[in-house]
Length: 110
Image (tube, rainbow, N blue to C red; front, side, top):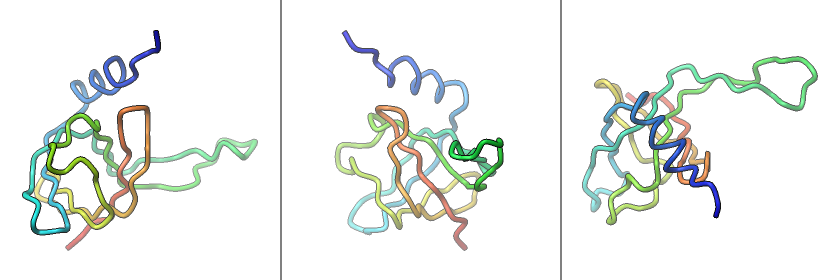
């Protein structure tokens, strides 16, 4: 039996720290939808290759669960928009996070 990361890590984390955001696909034939995400305006990432604990970057990110995506839009794309608290962010990178979730790298959009 394997450990279900999504059920025991992702789901409780989003329940505690998540908020509902609007995802607006770049392709207009797909309808916008709400999704829960764990949003961080100043996510700092440590560089594990350095002997010192220095910060290598500062990013705006949101973590989402794959299972929360609607059937008609099961793959997030670069160029899609996320609206959080009346601010728009463009997705500039989609990365696999913990099994069953994605880390979306965002850039504030006018």
